[in-house]
Image (cartoon, rainbow, N blue to C red; front, side, top):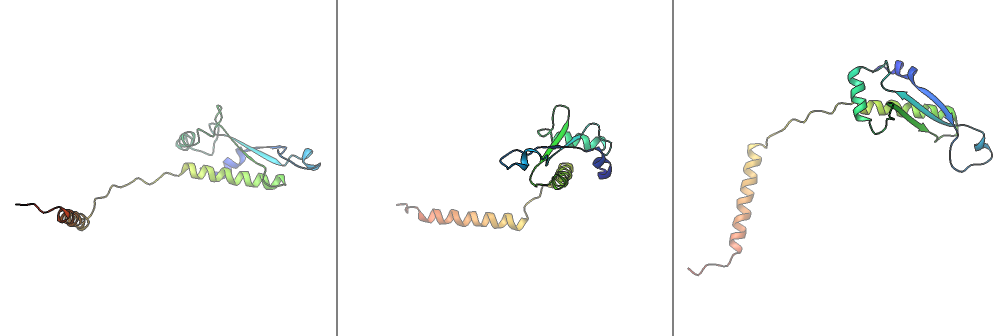
Length: 134
């Protein structure tokens, strides 16, 4: 993954924020929408693209576009920085390869301890029984 190349491929669009507001909100487009075309990206290898398509399939459009929006801050500049930061965090998390689980065996002492405990519990329950008349 080459962040500089990917940063050049991002396209931003300023849109009006939704929700309640005063006179100012109707004329200022402070919300920022980031779109990134995953298949046409030159900053990602084929393996990375494949992994991202698989991991982010529920967040992609039919044209394999990743679209993120941010309208938290009042300033367009801050929203642009926030959405870019979120985008790179999302990519980083999706490209992380989880460690392969190595199956382990219980140690001899732990097996012995477990069996000893079972025997003890069994004897305890046997001692609770009514004595036989024989």
